Image 1 (tube, rainbow, N blue to C red):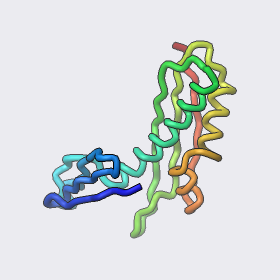
Image 2: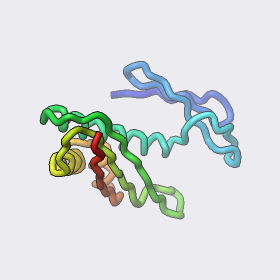
Image 3: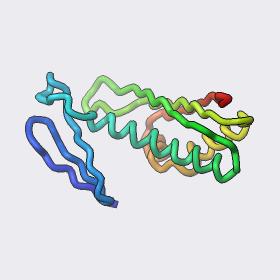
Length: 139
C-alpha cells in the first residue's frame, strides 16, 4: 500500500491513495486551517470505522444473514499532552436486518475486533483501549 499527501496551502493537504482516490484534509481556523475537510486524526477514526464495518458486513453476508444496513458510530478520547494520541476508541454498531439474530451480529463484531480489522487491532496493540458494542434493528 502507498499514499501521497501533498500540501496545498495554509493547513490544507490533499491525500491520494495508491488506488487513485483523493481526499482533502484541513485544520481548524485557530490552527491556520479553513475547515475544508476532515482533520488527519478524524481520518484515522474514519479508517478504523470503515475497516471494522467492512468486516462486519462481510461476515454477516457470508453467513447469509439478511442485513439491510450497517452504521458504526465511532467516538474517541485523546490524551491532554503532546502528542495528543488516542487513549480510547469506541465503536457502536447499528445493524439493520430481517430476522437478524443478535448472536450473529455479536459474533461478527467480535471477529472483526479480535481477528480481522487491521486498523483497530493495530491501535489496540499500541495501547489504545478499543471497545465495541452493537444493537440490532429490525428492518
